[in-house]
Amino acid sequence: TSTVSASVLASSSLSEYTKVGLQPSTSFPGELTAVSPTHKSLLTCGPAGNTTSSSPSTCLSTCSNFPSCTSWTFIPSLPQNCQLNCGSTLPILASSSKSTFGNNLGRDPSLSTSGLLSPSWKYAYIDRSKSSTTSKPGKFPYATLVHSPTSLRIFVDVSVVELYVDGDVISSRVYPDDEHSEYVIVEGEGVKVELNV
Image 1 (tube, rainbow, N blue to C red):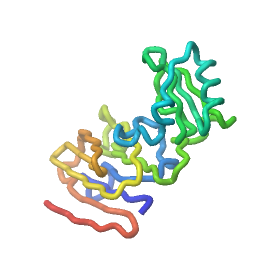
Image 2 (image 1 turned 180 degrees about the vertical axis):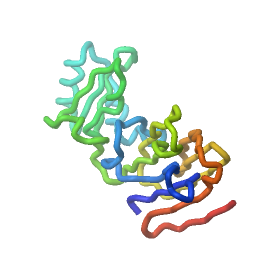
Image 3 (image 1 turned 60 degrees about the vertical axis):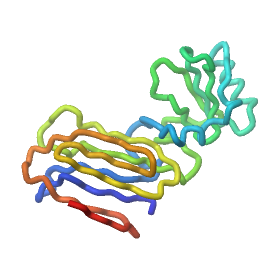
Image 4 (image 1 turned 30 degrees about the horizontal axis):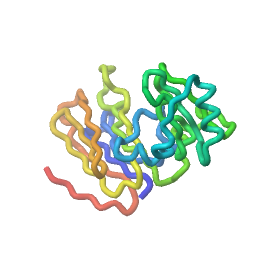
């Protein structure tokens, strides 16, 4: 399925819950926060896609002349400071304030959440925005990109929520206010659910 989610540590009134799951890579609200290390190589242009450039403009020129390069990132602190991407119109390290980036398709990367060219990419996420009814710190969502996920496992232990997608994991603490926030709601078509308490 393309979208599956579970609301865990939910109160009976649904005034608080933590939502975890998978979504298409173009629909997650927020910036690209991480690409699974297991899958990052699928976005780069291979070993030849990591080069050394003297400036952002030469990195852009390298991307323009590289077959199938769609975006680039110039990171001055790295030895191979020009990273060429062939699987994403949004540079992988676009959120880094120390990098310069752009794409080679004449479109604004900010118009797409992830810029990914393949529908096989999904966001695995823990959304903590409604994890408590009061404004407690640490309610921003965690998300990572994974390629062609086949399984999703969720573990909840008091205030810790862990999401396992194939070999990757996202872990977070949540602080529900309602001591009876113990319900689980699963959404998605064609989803096999196994619940262990």
